[in-house]
Every structure is written in C-alpha cells, then in structure tokens.
Length: 152
Ligand SMILES: C[S@@+](CC[C@H](N)C(=O)[O-])C[C@H]1O[C@@H](n2cnc3c(N)ncnc32)[C@H](O)[C@@H]1O
Image (cartoon, rainbow, N blue to C red; front, side, top):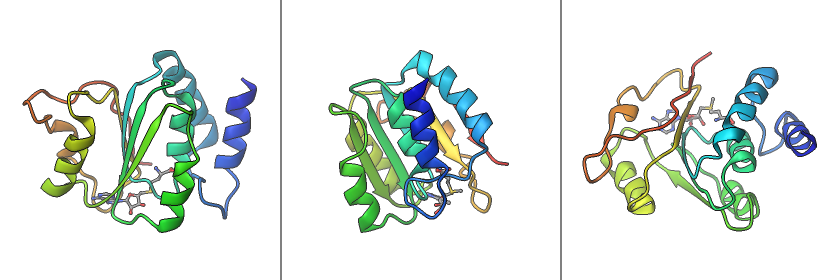
C-alpha cells in the first residue's frame, strides 16, 4: 500500500511535528486492520506531535470526524492540522485533561449524535485515563468500537 508507506515515512521522521514513537511494524499492522473498518468517528487521547493522528486520518473514512485531546496543544499543531486529512474530514484538537468534565463536554459538543467508532489512548504512562473508556455519551450510551490502549 504505497500511500500508507509514504505516510508512515513522515510519521517516523523524528524531529518534526506529525511524528510518532510507536513501533512501526506494530502500528502498520494495526492500520491495515483499521483500514478494513474505515472508522467514521475517531477519538484519540494524547495528540503529542500528531503522528498517530496523521496516520489515523489517512486510514479513516473519507468524511470522518477525528478528535484528538491533549493537555498541551500548540498553535503550530492547530495550523498544521487544518491542512491534514482528507478533504471532507473534520479534525478537532482539544486542549484539556481527558479526565475533566470540561473536556468531555467539548467532545460531546463535537460528537452531537455520533458515536465513537475508534478510541485510541496513546502511551499515557503517568496518568492513564482508566475511566475514559467507561464514560458514556450525553444520552447515556456507552462509547463503543475499538479500544486499543497502547501502553508500552
Ligand atoms: C506518548 S504521547 C502520545 C503519542 C501519540 N499518540 C503518537 O503519535 O504516538 C502521550 C500524550 O498524552 C498526553 N496526556 C497525558 N495525560 C493526559 C491526559 N490526562 N489528558 C490528555 N492528554 C494527556 C501527553 O501530554 C502526551 O502528549
């Protein structure tokens, strides 16, 4: 898959934004599985440099909504992500603690009636948001879909 290999090349070029420290073979294998599902709503906890978000946007549905939360979001990331993703995709960066009600409200405001298809909690050693995946949407429905928690 040529496009995926090109995108992986960017994501594994250290020193840039849009990079990741995931294990390349592992994330590639996972992206190939995700590619069959083409999630329409992606929620990531831990944007960091945006590497996995870049990869997920490449694999997600043409009209997917992608939300990525981090304690810290920089202006560079916000600008860059305006130009990332497929034409009809919507990418939202939320600055906040994934545990907080405020963050949950912001996510709910973006999701409206949509449910999360794929939740990725990325490498959060110190404050693994254990409760996040048990949270429910504003109508009390549990968040459903994939739940890969990368904690290596
Ligand atoms: C290892 S990085 C994520 C890696 C990234 N997904 C990638 O491209 O591979 C972990 C990120 O989680 C963020 N983080 C840690 N605790 C958090 C919390 N409670 N809420 C939101 N973000 C958090 C950190 O600021 C850090 O940027």
